Amino acid sequence: MNAIGRQRRAHALFVAVVAVLVIALLPQSASADTVSDKQAQANAIAAKVEELGHQVERYAEQANAAQIELDELAQQVAEAQAKVDAAKAQQEQHRGELRSYAIDAYVHGTDDNTAALVASDDLNDLGQREGYLSAASGNRQQLIDQLRATEEDVQIQIGELNAAQAQAEAKKNDLTQRQSSAASAEAEQQRVLSQVQGELVELVRQAQAKKAADEAAAAQARVKATNSGPTDFGPVPTVAGGAGAAIAEAKRQLGKPYRWGAAGPDSYDCSGFTMWAWRAGGVSLPHYSGAQYSSTTHIPLSSIQPGDLIFYESPGSHVALYIGGGQIIHAPHAGDVVKYDSLYYWNTAMMASRP
Image 1 (cartoon, helix red, strand yellow):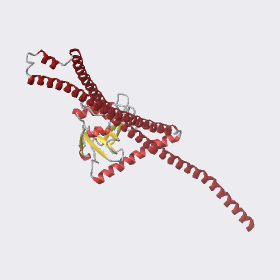
Image 2 (tube, one colour):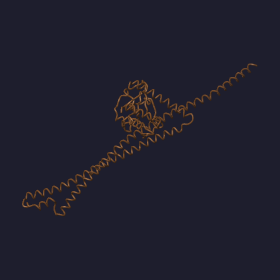
Image 3 (cartoon, one colour):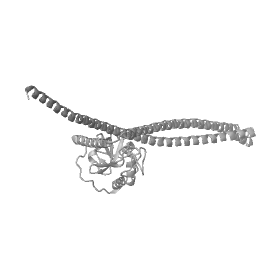
């Protein structure tokens, strides 16, 4: 074989090798890109689902707060209505007294005091006569003044009733808006999840698990850096008393679904869950995380004990029950169930209180 033949053969071999390499490498590159794209999609879906879950919970707790205010306003309306009814009854009483006075004066041609004066043997006593006339005029004026006063009181009480009713109506509208927002966020979360199919289901689950682990690690590192709370934990202790009863009851609710506005026994939102648990411990808590924080004893995070309430982001956003050993039990958010979690499951501000 001459030199030209050898060159052509070498060139052909080179082209064949390159072709094999291209065929081998291109599918792998495309496959890698596909995996990367799906992982990015899964991460985005996991983040969206989590944010919508927190939105549902925020709106739910705002609705719980509005419901408490509405209940208080309803009581104010009832009290205002009772005052109106009492004022009207007193008004009618004074009207009756004045009406009787007028009828008596019409029938007798005078009033009782003047009639007494006419029947008296002391008609020649001018001073006594003037005294009777003055008393008669005073009685009539007193009845008129009392009626005017009760009429003014009725108008004042009606004004206060109208104001209380207007406040109640505004709060009712606010409650409806919060509930609508929670329902919309929950529906959007369900819509997003309904689009997750095939291998994306597992990728999203992995993304959620990784994000939760990253959040917990970041939160614990932040707390450790600021020395604001515990970071080293022993095993979950056995707890007695009210806290022990609350924790035992909380464990009995594990696996039940989160549902905004719910307070048991089949489903819960976050404050409904802690309210239910602590009821077993002998403590009555309001159905709103912000009110639970306000009505309990605030303690530093570094001093928490089993049974304490842990608040995340703000007192009005989320509440959980601390059980010791660095663990909580809570109703996390829409799409989830009552479950165990790390104390630092959410890398956000944290507060604590003791029922």
